[in-house]
Length: 271
Length: 271
DNA sequence: ACCACCTAGTTGTCTAGACGACTGGACAAA
DNA sequence: TTTGTCCAGTCGTCTAGACAACTAGGTGGT
Figure 1: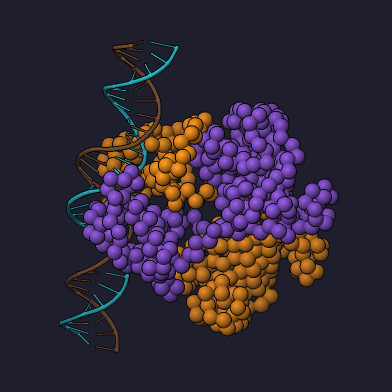
Figure 2: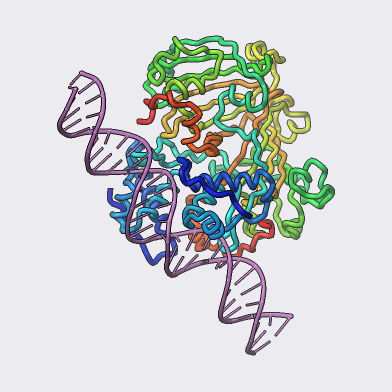
């Protein structure tokens, strides 16, 4: 395993160049699932960087879920299929584009409204504070997929009402014009039956199964920026997502051992 | 901000002790949302560690989503409410325990079956390979919540059929007896109407809304270990989860800049 | 009033080492 | 055959620095 030399004049950090070279090897199939990637020392010696830099590159791959490490053994390529359809914080426009469909909207309502208690609480805004309300029917290749109603504090995007074309991508506009980039979102998903009005808007039979999403999107600082309530047809819309086991991260392995998990056998599934 | 001295004799790493002290400060309210945490230099000088060790502690807090950093400004506490109900890779038993309910099961079926094509493919197993099938009705405080059907390759847990009490926690047994720890799971969620048989088992009306989960759980190496298909009542079961924006992680910020996002204004939402 | 410059403080990147813990294999002793 | 020991290779942790990039505020000149 020989990696291409690094560009030491570039503004791109060395650890990131190494990460990309390893990703290329994995994507090209030169490194397959379960195989060890070059060790920290190999990378350090082979590319003329210090071990900490090589280590940072490998750590970033682990964080991405592309590899995993075993102390005393090495770093190995995960069996992950890098699925594209994993649910993320995506606007409808982005989500449909990722699936190769054309996103469109019918705008039902685009106006300023005072915040009701529930939404104000979710957005950490004052009750009654002006919010921009954007109520749209979302279409994929002209077929209605869902009804979406977004609320965003007006102070964050003062002239949005005047300048935004409500049939285009809200997230893209927020990012490009206001520097607001969604970092994560907390969402509650419910399943229900379509009401008469919803059924009519979505052109499905009353009583058909639908998803109801209640989502609060936030920027990196954790400040909530958008409250969205949506109803999606369940016959044309599935949710694919990845769950991770996080609670362990708050407990150091050595602490776990002390709690008496000592009889655990070595897993026969790691190979 | 003064942190308690470190225990240099402990097996717990210094960076982890620092992380825990900072977490304590945040949980106790001494550090509030938006406030800066001690800088790398402050921590290094105050606790007598090198800056890289302090940095590792701060990095781990960022990874947990507890803080975020701004180059040239500092590290700040996120406005995240550390919600406990975020969806994870949890067994039904664990999930109900987290909600303060008593989990129980009615076992419908517990036997060895040959793998059908769809399941074999999801588990990367040979078609026809023996799987342990565990079909259960899941009860929370004696109320039926869902129907679950799990499949696990028998080679991973040879004597499970003989030794497992099928009304207890499968994940706990897999972890304690076989060293199999689920690390992540890919899941597809659908919404549908309960069939007559499902409605009867769940004691709801036929045609009530239900969730259908199809989940493949894997260990850290990415090897798939369990295939589960479940049907849950939507009237008593909601899904709360957190979405993150990941695609950016594959693109270094400096690369983004070169792509012409230069007109982005500084976000007024970071404060 | 505005702008350019400087400076102190911060995080980001990187170096060149060190020791410890763990794995797996080779080898010798019982 | 089994057991214990040693050893090379690996990742985990930690040190003590260095320079770069960026932010925010102050200063002084225009």
